[in-house]
Each structure stands twice: as structure tokens, then as C-alpha cells.
Length: 98
Image 1 (cartoon, rainbow, N blue to C red):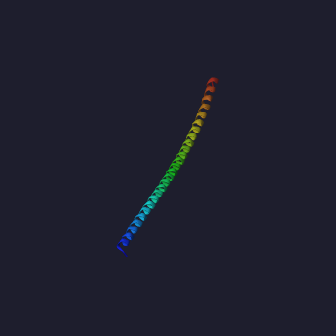
Image 2: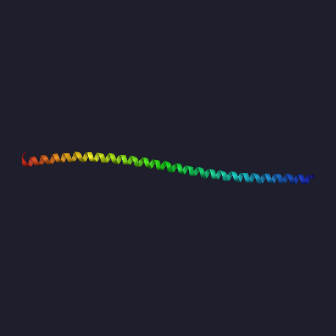
Image 3: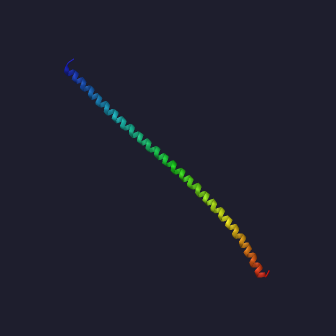
């Protein structure tokens, strides 16, 4: 084999190695981009779940507060109605002189 032929073969191998290196780098960049997109999607899904859970908890807590408020309101209404009845009786007795 001549020196020129060996030199050409070496240059060809170097060129092939450079092309393979570029291909591998491009592939790695694509894979990294895909992984980043996947991680972003997972983070968004996780954030949505956290928001949904927080919303559910807030709705449940609000519902409990409303129930407690309604219960308290009913109790006050019963007390007021009872006192109103007592007041009406007292007025009637006062008017009738009983």
C-alpha cells in the first residue's frame, strides 16, 4: 500500500468518525429535548393534581363551614322563636291584666 492510499484511508476514517460524532451529538440533543418535554408535562400534571386536591379540600371545608353556619342559624332561630312566643304571652297577659 502506498503512503497516499494509507493517508486517504486515515482521512476517510477521521471523516466517518466526525460524522458519527455529529450524529451522536444530534441524537443526544433530541433525546435531551424529549426528556425535558416529558419532565415539563409530568410537572404540569402534578401541578394540576395539586390544584385539584387543594380545590377539593377548600370546597369540603367551605361546605363544612356552611353546614355549621346553617346549624347555628337554626339554633338561633329556635331560640328567637321561643323567646318571641314568651314575649307574645307576656304582652297578652299584660294587656289582659293577667
